[in-house]
Image 1 (tube, helix red, strand yellow):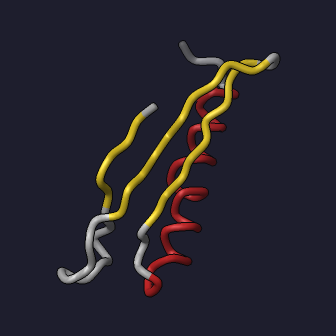
Image 2: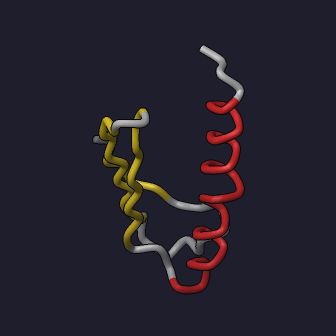
Length: 69
């Protein structure tokens, strides 16, 4: 499990840091990563949600599918 304070460069100085929680588990087909991200400011909720897919999940999936060590 990884728990960390997280914030976007798009957030206002007055916005508090959010909390990001990643948990890892073995599955019959390999593994699973679950992400929980709380306290994201409403003004950037859509951007952060879309950003996780665009900048993290899709690149990770592509990298792992390539079979690199």
